[in-house]
Each structure stands twice: as C-alpha cells, then as structure tokens.
Length: 90
Ligand code: FES
View 1 (cartoon, protein in one colour):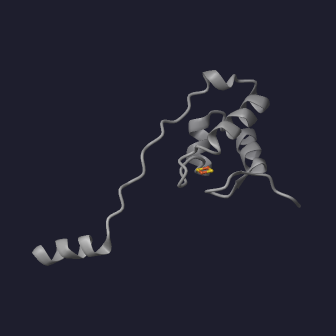
View 2: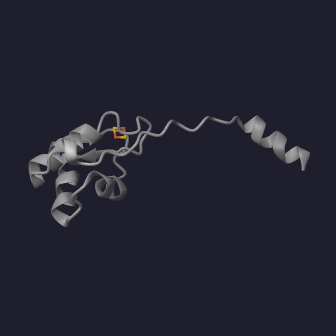
C-alpha cells in the first residue's frame, strides 16, 4: 500500500494525520504534539501547510484561523571538544 508522506522529517503520512483528526486532534498544535509534525530539522517549513490543508478539508476550519506554531531557530551545534574541555576545568 502506497503511503503519502506529509512530514518527511518525522515520517508521518497523510493517513496518520487523518487518523489523528478522527481521534479528536483538531488543531495544528494538538497534531504537532501527537505526531511530532513540524519538530524535525526543517521545523515544519515543508509539512505544516500541508497538514493545515488536510485539517481544513476534514474539519471545515479555515487555514487562516488555525493558529500556526512559531518557527524556532535551530540550536547552535557544540563540538564534543568544547564539551570535553568544560569537564577538564572542573
Ligand atoms: S517535514 Fe515535517 S518537520 Fe520537516
């Protein structure tokens, strides 16, 4: 069976989203917490609008009135050497 992936970062399919909506998760924030949509490396740039359209189609809510999550910048990477050097100072 072919799956339509809507969130590549978290491997979430359209069917997963529809099933969650049927379970009662009816806004983006609830879907985000249940399925981890928008929490991958792209921070939802790819999937949030797609999920919003599925939600609009299933519930009749307008996308513009659906609160979209804020985009957070990625955490600055810290090298293992930096972390190890902090242990040496203690
Ligand atoms: S595609 Fe959903 S978080 Fe990246």
